Length: 255
View (cartoon, rainbow, N blue to C red):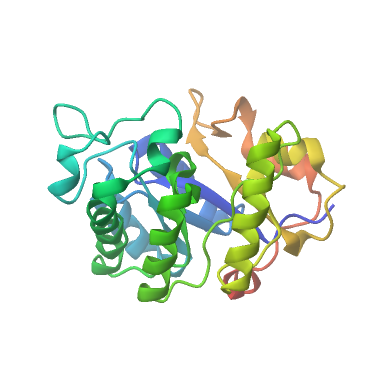
């Protein structure tokens, strides 16, 4: 089976063991793009390495409201942050769906995270998010506005490759994804993690129809693994499932 046209690694810049694994897979052609967290500890080093290796056109922003250090002051006073002013993961998603008076505060923070990558001299190939925060109803509208303002052509769909998802989520995800396609901000029909994809491989149409999301990390023995498949070589796993080589980077970038 042909590999997906888009294979995107999340969490670039989060920690050195993630940054180094992701950059190695980008350079080798194992993946096509990476999503960078501009709120994270390894951001500056990751930017420098991306510049040195000439792969800045393959980087997007991995927006975060649940991990890392905020870039704007206002959001530190909200429930998104702990007593030390760092992002924390909220229990459940319901609180994220009701921004209320914090709408403008969240919008400024997300905008700052995207602009920080542009200010570092990199391009924004796409927008997605940590813990899927960008698909929350109130937040998704802000993300669309930011993408359009900054000229970003692709926003990650709501994950839709998990057959066990609840009916309410499936209905929302379909509506959300249709809107992104209608706005010209989606280039695929499906998106999912490596385990989700493996369960459905061969049943969801041509390679250009889906985005595979991976989480490369350096394992204890130095091999590059996927965070969701510990102990297994990411390259070997992809080779086993998709014997054909990935699509050329130029073709992937065109999406």
